[in-house]
Length: 261
View 1 (cartoon, one colour):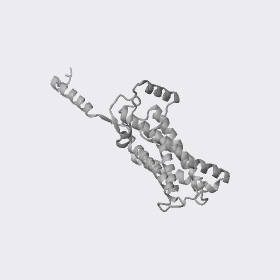
View 2 (view 1 turned 45 degrees about the vertical axis):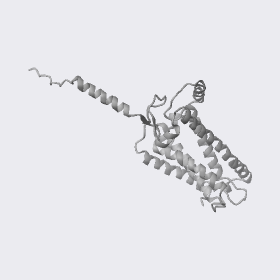
View 3 (view 1 turned 180 degrees about the horizontal axis):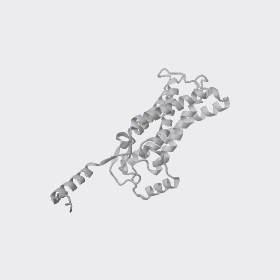
View 4 (view 1 turned 30 degrees about the vertical axis):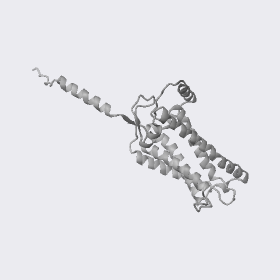
């Protein structure tokens, strides 16, 4: 016995045009795509704030009633926690925040730089090849500066980092000297980073600074990704990384024989 095939309702040409028009309309509405997750943006601006506070808490210690630099020391340890957090987030964070997404071979960065000199426009959703190495250098410089502060003895020979008593006088003198000099080198890197981002924003119409505030960038043909993939429960995952980072920093200080207060 033959079984009749189920009847299908033909789609009218007008309906097909309506569906196609809706798809095009939805695509046109998406003028911006996700670039950075909230934890990465909070890390960035928190680090900027703490670096500024480090300068203020040292140079104006007496003016704020803190001659023993207590606020400066805690500020430095907070910076170190943020750096460790960013390292952790570079492995478990959203796509554009992961090291695997933006750390490239040096010759790739060189090729990108040569293209810039030739006037060739190349767009990246996340960090471009040159910018990625600036991020690495900044993280290393900030981390080294914060670690050096743990062993630094100030000129009054009273104010010291929590681990200063665990090393020799010669090592203390060497680290203390470079801790004071290193901050100026760090400020130079920060100034270069700000200048480069400002030039991209103003002259190349690449809103790097705006994207780090709002988390999105205009839709474009990006070389690295069309849109960032935000990890599930990003906020909870970031809080977990922050807790682990704090445990690593403060736990290490205690295990190495330092005092937090």
